[in-house]
Length: 200
Image 1 (cartoon, helix red, strand yellow):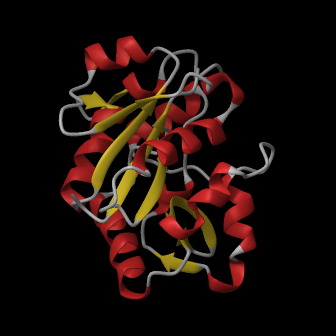
Image 2 (image 1 turned 30 degrees about the vertical axis):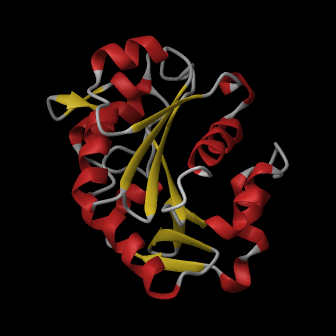
């Protein structure tokens, strides 16, 4: 098992999109499958958090080899999915850090994921985050030492509050990957994602 778990957050209802984001088509596959392929190529330990439409996702995407966590509280927001992943991974003593990747950022590359992993492994700060041209995005990485704080994070600010609290020690990993700051919330965002044209 890798020391770093890549947690793909795929539990939301995708209301603005109008259809399940994990199952949106991309490169002959789906958002979730494309991301899991990148995670595997980066040699991170795959973990997927499901919630809304979890059964449809399980039927449509090959999740073998990944830890699959069901978040019964998915309607309360993304923080509950982060916390569900933390509770699951706490039992995996070999995992020293988790990195968060929302499923609506499927074009984040394996090379980018690996770059963030390697940068963290070199110094092991409490938190790390990918950035493109000064803009921070995902993956966002949290070392095991701050997981209790993720579990106690305020619902409104979530993991951002922990990232901000450790700003003096935060490792910002500059990457040449615009997709770390681009997500897909609407059908027009999905069209840009399909076309491989990042919109800012």
